Amino acid sequence: MVTKLRPRALVRASGGPRYAAALAVDALGTGLLRPFLLLYGVTVLELSAPATGLAMTGGIVAGLGCTPVVGRWLDRGARSTVVAASMLVRVLGVAVLLATPAGQVWPFAAAALLLGIGNQAWPAAHAAVVATVAVGRDRDTALAAGRALRNAGLGIGALLATVCLTGGTTGLRALAAVTGLAYLVAAVLAWSVRLRADPVPLSCDEDRAPAPRLRGLLAANVVYVFCLNVPEIALPLILVTQLHASPVWSAAIFVANTVLVVTLQVPVTVALERFSRRTALALGGVVLALSYLGFLAATSLGGGWGAPAVAVVSVVCTLGEIVYAGSATALATALAPPHALGRTLARFEFSTGFGLAVSPTVITALAPHGPTALWGSLAAATLVSASVVRRA
Image 1 (cartoon, rainbow, N blue to C red):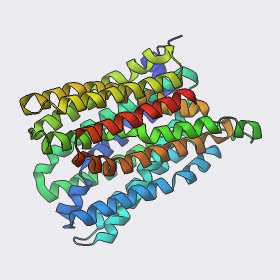
Image 2 (image 1 turned 60 degrees about the vertical axis):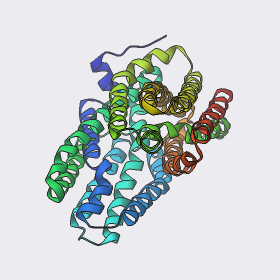
Image 3 (image 1 turned 180 degrees about the vertical axis):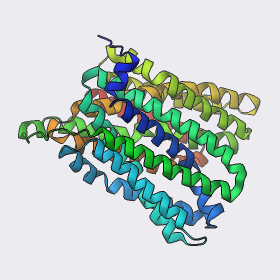
Image 4 (image 1 turned 180 degrees about the horizontal axis):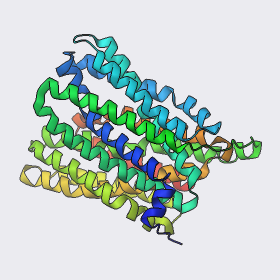
């Protein structure tokens, strides 16, 4: 039976008004700085682009290494405290960033490390909060609503940051300061919720039963998550270097992706409640694979038709992303043993972060070999992952 939560009930299922406000402020702050952190390192701190990129990558990898600690903390009953901590770590990261002298790469690396830890700890902690206050399909809808809210905040923050860039280095420093303040406000709001859960005693049977299914989901998720970097990396790369299209096309596709996710994430997730979570996730993989084949066909057009065709197909890819995002975390949460909810969500976030970390390398390595190598490989791998999910 398809559920339809009223707005107030949806807010309650998402953690309550103060927690929803914390999510919005946190997303706004992340949107302000995250897309421009590389630019901050190169422009304000006068670091080389390779050194800046390496420091940012190190922060992401270190953040992934902290996910087991987050999982164990959650399984001890902590909920809103972990969310608040993930925000406070980023406050410290921004403070270090602002204190970094020009030309000094190691303080910048320390700031990127703290920001990476906070960014990687947040998703698992947020999912655990929602799983504590909501159950069943209400929980799935609340997770979808949280993603829509976060995308809206990220989009607005990035838009405001773009305006601030006209102020040069002074504008970027002000941008970082406002980001730190936003994280601090969000942390206070999240802390005030004071949500905990009673630790569940260990059950050997529960511990063993879902393991094979979870392993299949985690492996498939590494491939699925490539779709999140398609609008940001793969499409701009193809449009500019192979189709020689204006960068405006890439910007338009990114904006359309954000708008579609914000407006359709909850309705699509609710509509898919008639299917099992596993079936919905497998369906999302099929839609993504079809979109990749669509990109293959669109890029073969070349000339003046290639870019518009890619833009049209990108809508299908975004729909696949929406189905994936609305079912993957929900399935991981449903499969998690009660005593290991935090560790399961942490493992799921690790697989997501790992996929996001390796996808730029894979995409940029395949692209020079032609559209078939890139889109054909992505389509085949995603279909295999969808089959793994369906059989798990």
